[in-house]
Amino acid sequence: MAPILRVHVPFLKISPSKVARREHDVSTYEAVHVRKTGTQPRVMSVSTSVDYHGVSALVRFTRPHTVLGTVTSVCSMTLLAASHVRIFDVFGILGQALLPAVFMNIAIVGLNQVGEFSSNTGLLLVSASTAVAFTWGALSESTALISTLLVSLVLGILYSVDLKMLRWKRFPLLAAGCILLVRALTVHVGFFLHASPQPINIIPPSLMHVVAVMTIYSIVIAIFKDLPDISGDAIHGIRTIGIQLGVKTAFSLCVFLLFLAQTWGAVHGFHSGSILRSSVLITSHVLGVVFVLTKAFKVDLLSSASLHAYYMFIWKVIYFPLLSSY
Image 1 (cartoon, one colour):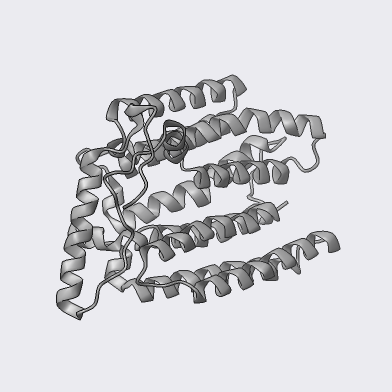
Image 2 (spheres, rainbow, N blue to C red):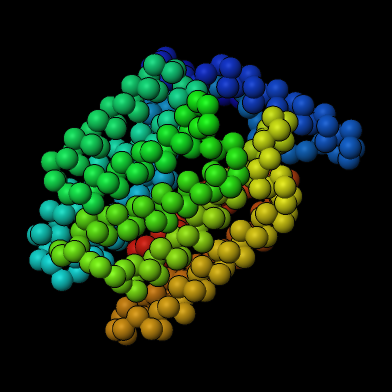
């Protein structure tokens, strides 16, 4: 029997309907799989006896891996754009952008989870995070920063809100478009423009490189995010890219794209200027290639847990091009 974790903040419990629906998906998928193949599939277990402690639930609500990705993006773009600015001024620029970026990230991922938690609490957290993000952003009087926050929120609403003509996460191409526009373009260009000490008319090559690499990573995230729960998507008739291509093909495509992104980064390192910068770029991306391929060989494509672990690894690999971009 799965261990029971006592709840101290009851309004942050996972919705019973969400758990029940997931259990139904798993049991139905198992029955279909056994009938077709004669073997028992390995899926992530779900237990109705497990409730999350209030603090743990709040942390999960914020999706820490996406927050860390946003923090890394904001810091790297600030340092890249303000590389010739005094260090104290850089900290000031970073202070203007970092807090609203984090709270907007929480608001956007929160929109995607309102149905999984107490709806009133979820909406309260989303509303409060949005208010803090825009209030702090407005204090900066930065058009680039406010525009970045606004565009990110609009795309988050289009992706998650369950209204007519919205909730684009149900449609693979639209979902991928939202992820790409936010993670690859809006975040990096927007925060670069905010940190730039003077207006720019032409996007510098360094920023173009980051956007190009992050575009590849965004495509990978858009494809891979649904692979661990592909059984539930199939049962509910959601035609994700993984279902259309098959888990093996989708996984292989993602690994190839990760390899391409890391290789591109290493090649870019040979033309990045100083010896130190070149060494950092080349070394970090070569290590990225090694990690991507090594871990890929260990993934069990029949295990949701194994696929989810590799998905979380992808978010860590994303930090390579960002941390080495400046």
